[in-house]
Structures are given as structure tokens and as C-alpha cells.
Image 1: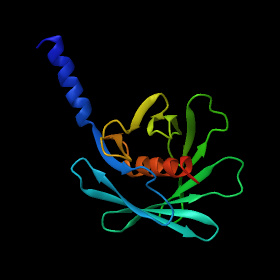
Image 2 (image 1 turned 90 degrees about the horizontal axis):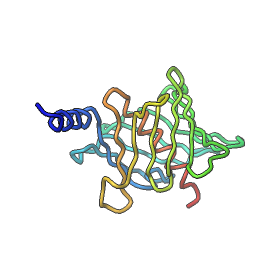
Image 3 (image 1 turned 90 degrees about the vertical axis):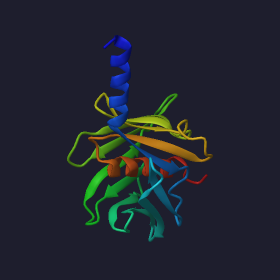
Length: 179
């Protein structure tokens, strides 16, 4: 087996180690419902945007309508913050926009019982990565689809896709707020 064959085999293995999802731009407009699809076009997660009480709430459900996560905007904060909670109201993660981000937008994600994540890149154009320490665990990109207002999320197979997709939905909501 030559070097070229080994490189091609490794690329194929890496592709198999990733899970791909398709999301719509401005997916989480409050008051709207949207679906997240897998590689085969199957609807796997529903994003239910609700305007409740004083803050906006987004319910993240599986294909059967079972609530998985609740995404809620935190009010009275200096910088943009949204909390991701489980169905019982326990905080799973908190997403915050960095105050100063020259050239590229940056976000931090405080994971309740895991390592913090860094999100950086061109958020508005849906070209960014989500990293755990210095290791990329997910990538968001519009270049994978030719359909307008559609972007892909590629998640490492050993990472919980629900939390990564919820983080992506939160960032999409916060980045396009008021637009």
C-alpha cells in the first residue's frame, strides 16, 4: 500500500468519524418551528421557537416531539448570554459572546460538567469551528450546500450532537437577533 492509498484511507476514515446535519439560516426565529435534518434528509430534531414571558425560549425536540433541551436568553447581562437547560431546568451549558473580538467573532461555551468550548470564525456567514481545548469537535459551513440559506454542521462521532446543534442554534439566534 503506497502513501497515496494510506492518505485516501485515512480521509475516508475521518469522514466516517463525523456526523453531518443540515440547518436553515435564521433557524430559530422566535415564533417559528424548523427542522434539522441528517445526511439522508431525515428530520431528526425540531427547533420550536416560542416567545414566553420576558425572555425568548427555544425548545429543542427530537423527531417524536420529546423535549431534549431548552434554550433561554438571559436578560440584564452586559454581554449576550443564553442558557441551555435540560427538560428539568438544570443548566447544561451557557453560551456567551466575547466582548472584544477583532477580525473574527468569538464565543465561549461553559459546559456544566465538561470542558469549556471555544467558538470562533465568521458567525454571520456560518463559517466557524467549535473547539474543545485545541481540538476541533465540530465545524459549521455554508459551502457544503448549494441551497440558499442552508448550512451544514459536521460533528465528531464521539461528541453529543444534540448539545453541538443546540450551541449552533443559540449562536445563530444571537448573531441574527433583530435582523
